[in-house]
Amino acid sequence: MPQSHRIAVLPGDGIGPEVMDEALKILDAVSRQHGFNVERETFLVGGAAIDATGGPLPADTVKGCEAAEAILFGSVGGPKWESLPPDIQPERGALLPLRKHFGLYANLRPGVCHPNLTHASPVKNELIPNGFNVLCVRELTGGVYFGQPKGREERNGEPVAFDTMIYAKSEIVRIAKVAFEAAMGRDKRLCSVDKANVLATSVLWRETVTEVAKDYPEVTLSHLYVDNAAMQLVRRPDSFDVLVTENLFGDILSDEMAMISGSLGMLPSASLGKSTDGGLNFGLYEPSGGSAPDIAGQGIANPIAQILSLSMLLRYSLGQATAAEAIDAAVEKAIAAGFRTGDIFTGAPGETKVGTSAMGDAILENLPS
Ligand code: NAD
Image 1 (cartoon, rainbow, N blue to C red):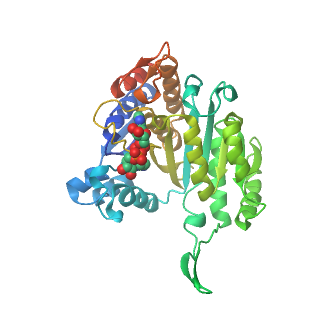
Image 2 (image 1 turned 120 degrees about the vertical axis):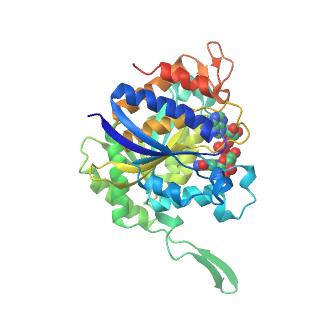
Image 3 (image 1 turned 90 degrees about the horizontal axis):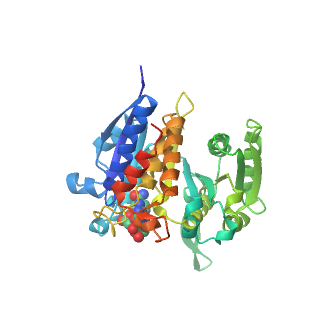
């Protein structure tokens, strides 16, 4: 009996449905080639859901996601819905509640610059002759964004404002484990980023990550202060394999990493939740970019971020690592063969400018049959 999986598909708005079509095309092919089934059901989310039901996250969508092993998410939002009250706007009203509902505490964002696309990176090309491939693991539900108390009051005749940076050891242990597991599947190097020279939370962070490392003797662990990590990322991004850090530092470093990678249209992300019995995670997988209303409906969006989001879903939630590797390799080959959507096209010799669907086809053709 072939293994059977179930996923919820939430294409959303703007370029979401266009790039999702390409990812599903790839899913059909890899599931056939690797002998497993993926039952999938599509649900409304974001602006499309507001138009159809009055709200950005209908109960049916949440129910459908609860019944699935993972969510493949497109992107949400656009000018049409920007004047709505904040709480029912597509991003705030759909993505944040989904993250909360499913307890998605680990955010994984690869920052990849392909060797053939180093010109798109603002990092000096002589520093990254072979591109780079870094994975940033960010704690997503703790730290200063959520710590209590937070607020604003009058003290000594002037307003003061305060936030609380707090981490429980168990929160650090679970994110560290995600990072070590990820490193085990890569080059087995993990750099933990903190500010242990100043912050008490960072001292606990460093102690705990060092303790968890004992369970992963094959992984080489290093530590960097966040200010140094920010510098090293632009100086030698290729020196990193996996980074792990707390919420605020991860927010900033993962955006820095996206920027130095070149194109937003190439970067997937995963937000992982509680472990299932098999040690795998429920997750929401989506491109790092948004709904790109400026190019939506034109058939020119880059589908690679969505296709690599599918690859992450297969690897982290469905345990289909071989199929995920096949997708990653097919993307590399399509790029090496010169296929470029507009966002990564430079007109250099050997490049062929293609639209969304033709890029999907080029990746499909490069899957090992
Ligand atoms: P954006 O990421 O949508 O677009 C920024 C730029 O990158 C645009 O020029 C766009 O054309 C380009 N781009 C993004 N993805 C691309 C792709 N796959 N192929 C080619 N080019 C691509 O960010 P924005 O313009 O700030 O936001 C647009 C809308 O998306 C807003 O409504 C915002 O709220 C929403 N948004 C949603 C998410 C999400 O769903 N997770 C994330 C960010 C922004």
